[in-house]
Image (cartoon, rainbow, N blue to C red; front, side, top):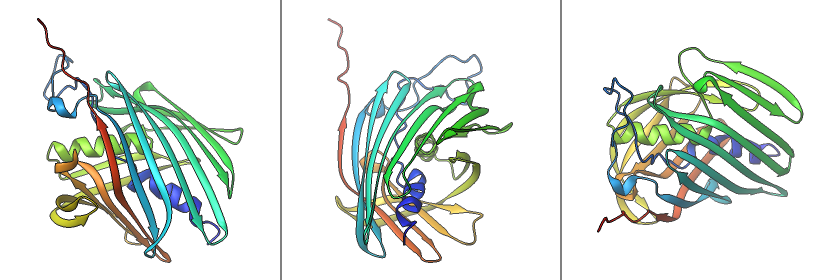
Amino acid sequence: MRLLPIITFSLVSIFSSIIYANANTLATPSTMDNTPTQLLPDKHNQCNKTLNYKIFFEGHHIGNYQRNLVWNGTQANVYTNSTVSVLITKAKLSQHSKFHWSLQRQSFVTDSFERNIKGLMTGKVSATFSDNGAKSTVIEDGKSHQFSEALLPILDGDTISAQMRLDIMLGKKNFDFILQNSDDTSHYYFKVIGEETIATNFGELKAIRVDQIKKSDRQLSLWFAPSIDYQLVRATYKRKLLDLKAVLISKKINCPQPIVLK
């Protein structure tokens, strides 16, 4: 149980990373001249958001998770705070990540992140990304690591969340990402399973279920509700002795008022 808070935080980077993709001007894949075009309805654009989740282990409430998203044009800042308590162990996580919409990639790309964990296994991790996501440098407790990828951009959990949400909104059925860990990179694959009606803190909702695939030793499932801004409303993770669940309990979404010319 000593490692459960840290394991939970690493999982939260994927399944509780709240899906925030809301750039003001995005280019569609068919755009050949790199001219930005409107991709999402106005109500989805540049909305600042605060979402709160509860985290459960085998049905027991063990922690809370909050994300704040602040937009500046096509760039976003995400501020994360989380506390996990299991038996006599307790850990707190705070993280600040930055990402933007890349016209060249036609996707979101990570700029940087800083993560700080206090309590059990205290540590600091920071990372910077360059060459439009092809390279990254991670510094963990003073030690530096460099990574590079040729086919896909290297992303942090927040950027993966934003891109996954956008892919779902575009109707894509399969997608994969390279996640930057503190000392390595991992390739994750996902598949849209279909639409399900689930019970949530906001009543019964129709949700789009997405499962992680190509991992026989675990089961990660995510549910996104179109009626709640395509946000993640439930996530479950099962692997050996782990049985984790995250549920959205409250939300606050502030969108800028349109400018009216007189």
